[in-house]
Length: 110
Length: 124
Image (cartoon, rainbow over all chains, first blue to last red; front, side, top):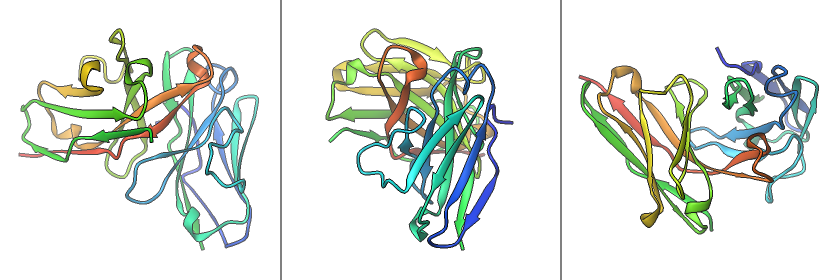
């Protein structure tokens, strides 16, 4: 059971906008920034969003992040087939004194 | 280019020992924390622990404390993850990742880049 809760799956058609939620608690998401990682099939995770809503260089602006209270969201607009991947949220947990991840959301582009 | 390159896949028997590696390049290896993350087959990411190569300060997730040892050799820009006695349940992909951030506050960090992963298979 992961400390951060994500839906196991999400889907959308090309061009659509999809959102993936990440629910935590006061010891992690409420007090700390949230990061998002994208894991394409058969590859290592890659940083997608850091500090709630910042995109690293090279990440398209179709990807955006937000946070409110003990929850965070990743939004993908203009969905493309190459966005099909697993997406993980992560945050530092002040009670556990360690990093915690969500269970991951498998995004399918129909 | 900042890069982490991990050692190759391993096939081991239960009870055997193993040490896998993660070599950094393109940045000052000593001055960034290196984390290890486990991904069991078909499952999600789990943070195992982290080391600061400059002074070898190491922190472990309670789930992995006593089960593995994290170490580093800053002279060759390499971090390690070690098991003394492998179990079948250690079968997984293991990733290293550099922790980077805006401040010394733990929460204001993220993992970038990640190594390509080392697949460890433990089977009799």
